[in-house]
Length: 111
Length: 110
Image (cartoon, rainbow over all chains, first blue to last red; front, side):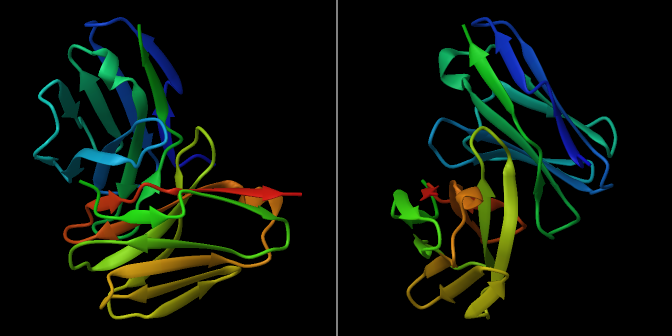
């Protein structure tokens, strides 16, 4: 049973066209994270929500935004995708500082 | 920059053999975790070792941590074809914000 669900699994967008990736969870975890993983590289934390508090990493580009309308859902918005934003985007959740549970990821292609 | 560096980058072994991979990191940590990632999928948590622990076991997995050397190792014993995946170490220095190493790609040949 999927506990952290990411939709879609594959997303194709055009250069400069805004795109939204979604993540939902059935674990009732209070912390949700977004990571970017480029091919054959380590996942890199973009930002996370601790309850309603948004925490941006210092080197996350302004092009990346996030919304968390409720406990279960979190969105990643890329305002103007560039070719360099093509990657796997991973959502994860945790209960406070307990271990993180990851979704299957959304692979984003930018044409 | 990455907190963790993993060695080797790739490993190919026969089924039944042991696989060992190493992770080095740079700063003090609360804990170190190992994750597995099958191709094109999300990460699956394998094991967490706290900074005051030296060794931990989970099934066929054995993890060691040497905080004086800022290094950890993951041993998979009696490997199976299903163990084929990438393995990442991740350090938690503060606030459950994980910093991942570059990963080790493991191929277990039947």
